[in-house]
Image (cartoon, rainbow, N blue to C red; front, side, top):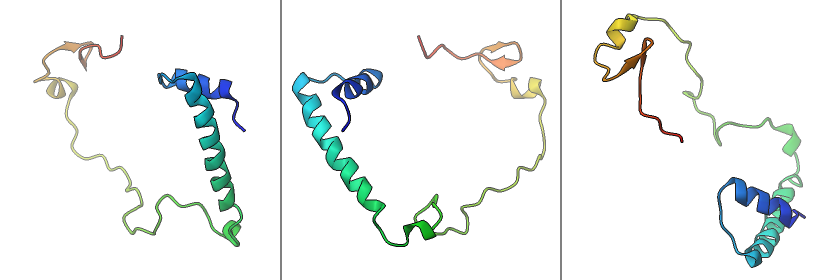
Length: 96
């Protein structure tokens, strides 16, 4: 069982606001969810399979090798930039 204190900590980190009574409901819902997830381990032969990235095999699911092609100079890359600082594009601050 997940302690309510842990749920409160998660809610705080995720910036959720919850009523005290909602934590009890959430705790019981998590119990149901965890029991359902535990049932997956009861599937026969599950250990015979490797974990998958996709639910089915894709021929294009591999990553290609990086190939260096034409390169441009830093000055060319920054030519149309509105604001520049120390050979980088200067952007407005997004995090306070």
